[in-house]
Structure formats: C-alpha cells, structure tokens
Image (cartoon, one colour):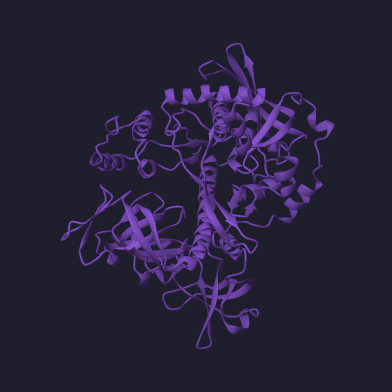
Length: 615
C-alpha cells in the first residue's frame, strides 16, 4: 500500500501492473507499507483503476514516530511519515509520561479498521521537536533504519584484534613497500580504498587496494546479519549511521595511514590508451603511506608541484578518462553541497563543493577495479549482484526528444539511443547557461541503477559487466562481491542464497538511505529558511508540474514551490513534454530553466515544504 497525505492511497501490484486507486474510506483499514489484497471495482475520476480492500495480508508498521497532540483531553500521535494519514490514539495510561508537543515513538496495539482508528502506546520519548539532532532521530525511526547493533554483533566486534596480526598476513602478498595512499574528503573517517600506480613501459601498472572486510565479517555471523539488515551506511549532515561497528569501519578495516591493513587487491596492467590489458585479484597486506584529501591533491596537481607518485596517478587518470570518452560513457557533472553549522547545530550557510580532477582520478580508478571484478565473476559463472543500469524506457526517450526539439537540440540514436548519443549531446550543450538544468532532464530520462543477479550491463557507464567492489565498509553488495571473488580464487561457488531477494533488498536499503538523508537535509533547510520568511530571492525554475513551479534559489541551494494559484488571474495549462505552464489568456509561459524572482512566504517544518510567490 502507498499512502498519500490527503488520505487516499494506491495498491502497488507485485507484478508491476498499473497502480489501483483507493479512496480515503478504503485506506482507513490499512497503513502505508501494508500488504493487502484488492479487487478492482472500476475507475476513478482520472480514469485510473480503482478498487476496494478485500483482505490485509501483512501489517508492516509496528512502531511509528511522530508528535504527541492533545485535543479535549484526547491524546493522539500525528505520524512524521505523512503517507500515514491516520492519527494514532494514545490512551492516557499508555502515554509513559510524555507531554503534548513531544516527539515520541508508539507501538501499535490495535491496527486500524474501517470502524476504528489505530491505537498505540508510547514506548520511547525522544524529546522536543526543536532539540538539536532531533531531525536525525526522527529519520532513523521514520524510515525504519536499524540504528543499534545487536549484542552478538557488538560482542563479535569487541573480540576482534585491534591491529593486523602476523597470522592474519599469512598466505597474502606483502605490498607494504608500495606507495599506497588514500584520497578522500576532509571529513571522511572510513577509508575503503587506497591506490598506487607505476609507469610500466609506455603504459602503467595500477594497484587498487580495498579493505578486506570479508576476512572479519563472515557469511552468516552476527556482524554479517547486522550489515545485511542495514545494507549500507547512511550519511547525514554531522552524523554517520555505519553499516559496521566503529571498531571495524573506522579502525581495523579502515585503510588508515602508517598501519598494516588486510586488503583485497585488483592489480591492473594498462595500455597507453587507458585500456586494461590484464588484471589479477588477490589478498594482500598493505600500508597506506598517507591520508590525502581531494583539496590538497588538486592544489598540488593544478600547481604542477605534485610528488612523483601523484603525478603518475594523474597521467594514468588522463588515459582512463580519455578511454571513457571513446567508450561513449555518460559523464554527468554534478555539484555537491555542504552544510556548515554553528555551535548550536543550526545551518550557517550552504556551500557548493564542485568536483575536481582529484575526485575524478579516484573515480576512474574505482571504475576500473569494479569493471575487472564484474568481468572476473561473469567469466567464471560465479553468482553475484551486478550493478545494472537498463536502457531508458521508450516513452521517456520520446518525451526527452520533444523537449530537446523546443531548444533546437537533438538526441541521436533513433528509438534506441546509446550512451555515446547522450555523451555527445552533453558535450554540445555544456557551454549553455542552462546546462545544469538540461543535464538534470537528461538524467531524469534514464532508469535508476539497481542490484540484481541478472547481468544486463550498465547503460550509463557503457560497461557489459559491472559490480560494486570498492566500498565493502559501507555497502553490503561490495562485501558480497569480495566473497564471490575469494570463492572463485579457491575454485568454489559462493551460493546457497536467494540472489534475487538479495538484489531487491540491497536496492531497497540504498533507496531507504537516500530518502532518509534527503528528509533530514530538507528539514534542516526548512529550519534555516525560517529566518528568511518575507525575503526576496532570485532563482531558476527546476521543476514544472500541473500544480505549480519548483524554484531553486541562487546561492542557497534550497528549492520551494510557487503554487499555480499564485501565478495570476489566468488558467495555466501544463505541457509535460515541454516542461512548461502556459497561460490560456495571457499566453504567459513558465518553462524549465527560466529565471524567476520570488518572495518566501511560508515554511512548514512538519511537511518539509517551502512556499514562494512571484516577487
């Protein structure tokens, strides 16, 4: 079931068929996320299939987080997840001393029915809504993120050694003399990967060393159970929810400088044109010689004063990047943002963090290792989770072509464009002032990458076989890849699992982490913009919908809605293909990427919404 804040909802069929609309009356007996059997009874006003609930098959909501309210002596919880549109009644005897206005977690003791509301009892009082860090505490529970390790996992981590022992290094190649370095962001604490490159004739030899998490986290043990449940580390502003206990993620597995660490190494011989001529995988013991940051590495490279080992890596990167272009891979340029906070946890400002060649250098090295891992597993018929990016849907391509035609642009490739067609278009439009927004439209036309045992290649990167190998500290699929490689090296099969279910689970936990991070960032941005209500701003239209325009403010990296009712006394028609609202009387047009002056009139922390009007 998929709930809507207005009370109605939809059944999302398991088989991928069209969603079935359910009225608010039908949704009274279920909650968002529940599984149910629904009978289609007709169509709704929009000609969508409509139905009625015959049976609730599974209740997935056991605990719900929200704010406690009191009205005429009746206590009830308003869920933070607005897709749960029903209030949860809380008997006074089950309030556990919580006061109205506080954020609490309730455990459902009575599920909803057509005749009655759900009832719950308070099991956790988190505090007041404005308490520092409350937005993260809410997100942990709202998105059902596992945030406490099991006692067995904690005990297992505690029993591990604090450092690599001599017996751990037996049977491994000793690469401690090689000049490995890590290159990460300034705030990074878990270092999955280290790199080293040397000239070899006219080409290069590249070593990509990845933390050997699979040596410590074995299939089916307590740490593995917890890591699988989490699926990935979750990164919030000012806080990380790690996939593994800190002793491993920041200590024993992290490739910290000047200490011995166990690693799985992908050693590659590369041609002068950046092609991988041969590769080899093996377990090793390494020592990172330095913990470097993107900022300092780029400062040295751009000034022409980088030490020899970095200069060699940079020359190798240029060859890999050129090979990427020849391959026709799509290379989207995104701008990351960073929130800066004061001592009280409030945002001081939001700043852009543009990517430089130090970021791209590491990215290309990781891509090369991931491709080798995918090829290694595929060639041996080893079960694996591939990182699959399917070809774009035909209807998305048609809509994209219509939009581009309005701008005098064209996507090559006919009905089945190739990655190189996207790449060539990006190259043609990169000098346009609206490039960032056009790039976003191209990105939206593509499918989302997923994990699956069925290898159909990676469209965006233009690879036939691609897996995630380089981040086993923070991604469960990478840990599975390591185990598969080790099994193949030992002439074994790593199987006995439901790989389809694993793929679905890892894809879902990835989306869950992204949703939780976005929710926290949205809350923080709303909190930040409360101080600017009444202010006038300039921005660009970054989204056009039947109900209005989304505008992203210059220099603030915050977006909000200009509702269609605020656009003046006219009837506006929505043109989806051209991403435009057109006034039927005035012929006034609002298009994607248009500039707009707006006034901030409302900020709603509860719904994470910001409202503008034209200035």
